[in-house]
Structures are given as structure tokens and as C-alpha cells.
Length: 201
Image 1 (cartoon, rainbow, N blue to C red):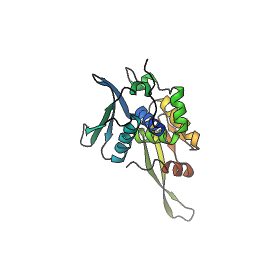
Image 2: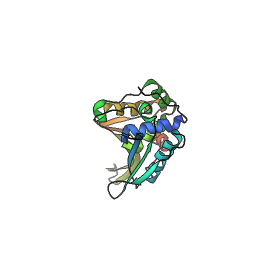
Image 3: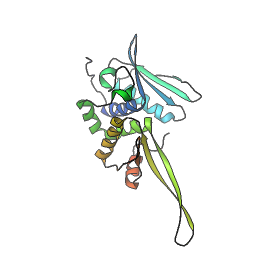
Image 4: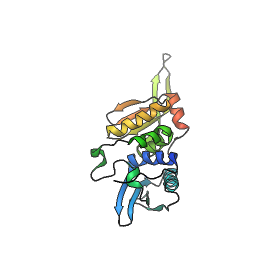
């Protein structure tokens, strides 16, 4: 049984919960428990965000950044005794097969900081794209249109449910495009997500 750590920064905690659920890995080492993320270095803003949240939440523990596999991989990790109690799905086996549920105290933090949680989820398993289409008008002219939308993709129904619940909490309208993809296309909802997520940087 791990003792829940003192949460020094709830925004960073909620952000890391979203990032970890989507793309994190918890490893046991001889020095303790290490939280690791494998990122695409072409999105340095996401790497910087993750590093900042890890540093703030662990009250200043150093975060190691190194070159990852592939031509554009970046790995960041840090060791902290609080990770196993803080993060869901901390255990053996494939994460999607274990299911994902937040403890009541984790859910309370996510409910207080839903924007940070959604930002982490979208940074790990989502994207903002421009949807383009053409249509023929009654006049015969072909008009081209383009509008932004967000997608969140994850094979776990539990994780998609967490995403949708946080969307609903702040008034973001979503639809399920297919069994693993959630779409946010309503103009006002996209504009709201743009205020704290935006295109991957």
C-alpha cells in the first residue's frame, strides 16, 4: 500500500494524470519509481509542458531529458517515491487490459482542474486538425470550406469516458466518430478548447 503524496500543485497533478493515462510509463528501478514519457521532439511545447508539471509536482526533482528512439524521439523521466500512489494503472500487464479508473481523490482534483486534464489527454492521444470539404451550391459554383476540430483517440472505453466526462464538465460538446475516436467539432466547443489546448506546438 503506497501512501498518497502531498499534492503541491493540483493543476500540474491533473495535467500529468491526463498525460500519463495516454502516454506515460511507470518503471521500477533500484532507486525507486520512475515516470517516463516518450515524446515526438517535433512538438517541443508538449515536452516542456510535461517537464514543468513533473518538476512542480515533485517540488523540484530533476527531470532528465534525452534523445529517444527514432529520428525525432525525446524521452523525459524523473524518479520520485510518490508516483505509484499518484498514478492509476500502476501495476503489471498492459494498461488497456487492466482498465483505468480514478480514485475519488484523483477524480476530485480532475473535477477542479478539468482543463489541465483535457490538455494532458489531448497532448498524448489527441490532435487539432483542419477539416476541409467542398460542396456544390445551387448556383452551380463549387465552394470550399475549412473548419478546425479536435480528435481524441484511445482504444480504452474507460479512458474515452474520462475524456468525455471532463468535456461535459466544462461544456464541450463531443460525438463518437467510431469505436475509438471522439470528435469535437462544434464551433463554440472548439473555441473553448483552443483557449487552453490549441494546435500541438
